[in-house]
Image 1 (cartoon, rainbow, N blue to C red):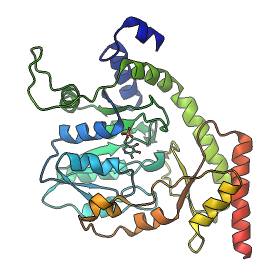
Image 2: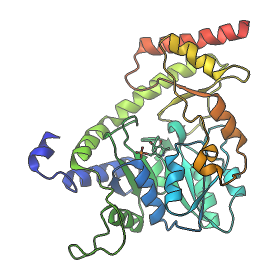
Image 3: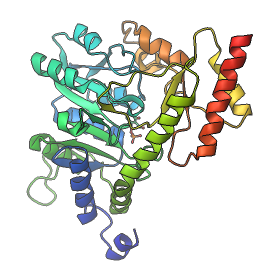
Image 4: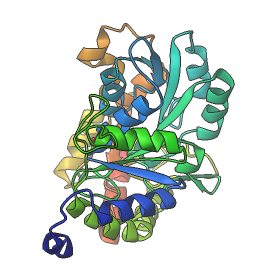
Length: 347
Ligand SMILES: Cc1ncc(COP(=O)(O)O)c(C=O)c1O
């Protein structure tokens, strides 16, 4: 950071290019385009894949609203297909919703658990659609040993709570030079070959050199951060009562545990479970309590029901899994959850 400040090159410099190269390589792709945040990275990726007004884009309703907003900002309509028991987009549900206006599928890797990118890439190819991965929560996740970028364009976020962070920031990674070029051009006001000549109405979606410097250091810590998250998750997997079901993780999918999510059994009150945990010092989160097709701006679409996503939105809770959770803390979290399960079973 200090080197950047002293150099006087505060944006669009060597650090950003180095971060793009290193991050793309680590995520399994050839090219990276760093952006101001993950939301605009997704928006640029959609534009670069030719998505625009009149098109439909199939995605999961169990995601942060930014996924749908990026689609809507292109002028396309998001169509929400249900998730499966991994809580990621179901390939069968997506296939059923493909129509004449469908142009793309956005696969969200929720909570860091990779979705079925192989099946969806096959489906997209067969039906002539673009597949874009919203990997904002899944930095470092792999499928069959391959990073997600090996399966096509993917978008990441470096928001403050993400597995690695630059405070705010994002990146499109791709091995398609045309996609990368379009994203880079639109990110920077569509400069043409001559100075101050612009060949499109574009944007300022740039990342700063200070953020890129932080990103490079964070990337160097990614393996250690992921390992800590996975150890915490393994502890919960082995020690938290099986009354709390977990989303399925496919055998060769490497989950990076942006969140560790449990399902509160039906008949129990999630609010009550959360409030009991809170009084015992354990904070939980719900990501996300309202599926996107029920959010006010998207209700008007009258999307078909997505029963699996809707029930997950009612019963999910996420417990602390971040790298700073100590062994004593994870023991306490597991024991509080088990205490709740034991009392619930007795009453
Ligand atoms: C699934 C998902 N998509 C998109 C985004 C948007 O990223 P950002 O907050 O960096 O704009 C986020 C993170 O916030 C996210 O979790």
